[in-house]
Image (tube, rainbow, N blue to C red; front, side, top):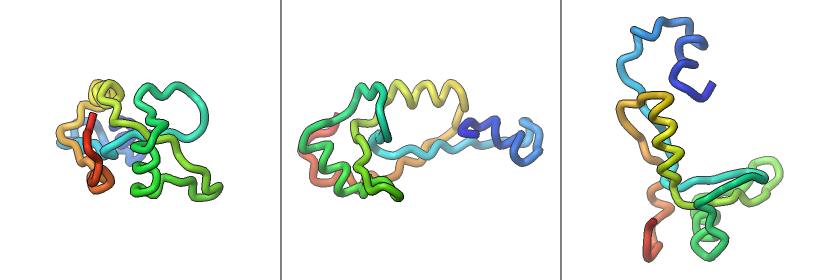
Length: 101
């Protein structure tokens, strides 16, 4: 389960036992397959994220779709999980870009 509530059902502990919830988020967004992707970058910046972030499928080797971090999705995740802090990963992948959005 990808929500904080999954901790309780997966481990069999009561919700009152959870004091801290840490969100782990990439510095950019990736998708596999079809579907809407409002922040998708189909340009050299998207190619940079793919290459520098090693964003290729493990089994197929197919490139993942890459785009800017979707703050609307992050806000929704916070509404569902009420995380108390965020761990942002892959910030190094953004190095070398002229502009961040």
